[in-house]
Amino acid sequence: MRFSLSAANPYIGPTSNKVIDIGRSSYAFDDVYADDFQNVADFLHLDSRDDLAELSRIKGSGVIDPRTGLEMIDDNTIPVWMLSKDKEGKEIIRDEEGKPYLAFRMLASLLMGCCRQLDGICKELGIKTDGLKAKTDDLITKTSELATKTSGFTTKTDELIIQTEALRKDVDKLKAAKEAGNPH
Image (cartoon, rainbow, N blue to C red; front, side, top):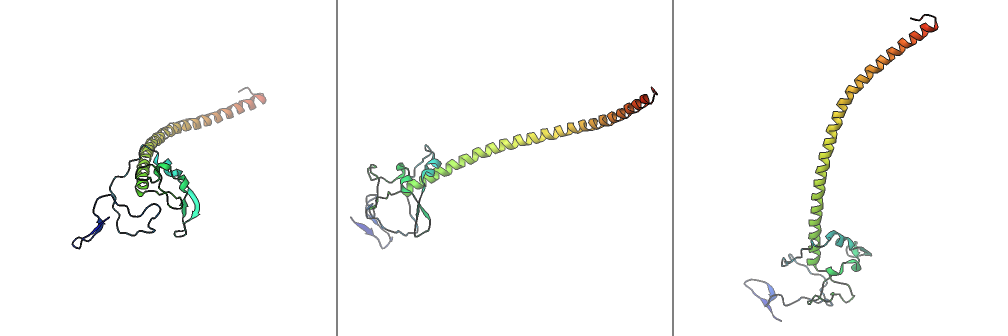
């Protein structure tokens, strides 16, 4: 293995492309600090899967990470298809404690798919909301029209009540006159 170091263009790197790994699954670096990590944009388009359901399958472990104070995920709930595989794509890569590796590429691809799926859901809800708003506006218009029509009925009903009360008074007078022996 050779590395190239150039004073004119300072960088350190391999002399051939994509043939050298840094670390191994059983001898990984603990922390890596950098300004930028550049990945080839060969991320995965996972829209054939229900991204939100896949993400929801990943549960908490109940174990608190001592460095962050946050709950860690349960490795056993990560869908197997997401776990990092060896170069032949056959075996799941694990550390010396048996914990699986999860590639940023896979996680980022899943999260991008979740975003697309949520965007689609939001658009569908927006269309449904617009439809409901139109139906609500229509109901408000019809209710207003009915209120206008009924106000006319209310006026006529009030008039009929007044006439009925006047007729009752006339009937009461006739009854009183009849009882008093006066037929008119």
